[in-house]
Amino acid sequence: MAQFTKGDDPVGRDDFDAVVAVLQGESRWQRFIVENIEMAQLGPADAKELKFKDGTFKIDKGSVNPDGTNDFKVDTRSLGLDDLPSDAAGVTDKLHSKIIMKEWDGARRSYLLAVLHECVHLISDPASGGTRYSTAHSHLGGGLLEGLVEAITEDILVDQKIPLPRDPGMIGHPQRVPIVRELMAQSDSSLWGWLLFRGNPRVVNDFIKSYSLAGWTRIKNMAVLNMTERAINEIRRLSKSPFASNLRTCGKY
Image (cartoon, rainbow, N blue to C red):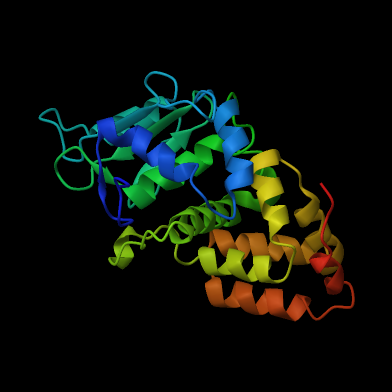
């Protein structure tokens, strides 16, 4: 029986292999994920126990230390990741292939959806690490990238019949996911996997050809600012252009 049955199930330091099992489980994104897991040096896909490199996964105490510091803030700042929103549940440092989660329940544990989200970041292109950002960041900006990663994370759970957390506060980037979902609906959705996990920007180039660079830039900026309704309306408006039908042309890869 699988270890996790809900997206808000707690995840401790020793549960990381079980999260990886969900990550590589059957989903619409599995064909991209399995290969990238190997590139992230988790071990061969048929290994009995898959592990990231030593020290990859850490859960920081959420409370303030006696000296006034906070472990999560100290650790993320030391990695040059000190511009995080206050409600961030965790962060991925692709440069050093590390995931740092903020304690969620007061028992040095996070929860499945949040940890899985960071795992998707970690194995995004380049899966082997060595760069600060995913390749897709330069094409999507931070808003659409976070929305895409969360959408894929939720798909992984839903496709394995693992319910998402019932608490809305445990769902990541709720203003950005609908924007990405609308873009997926207007395009060949499989190309988003090629973008995030293989670094192939064809889907973005197709949107720029159809919407214009200025139109695509407006949508990216709206996603950063969490302007969900305006972004969706802009996507639907631009999708009426004569060139928008090209977005649904399936690519051969």
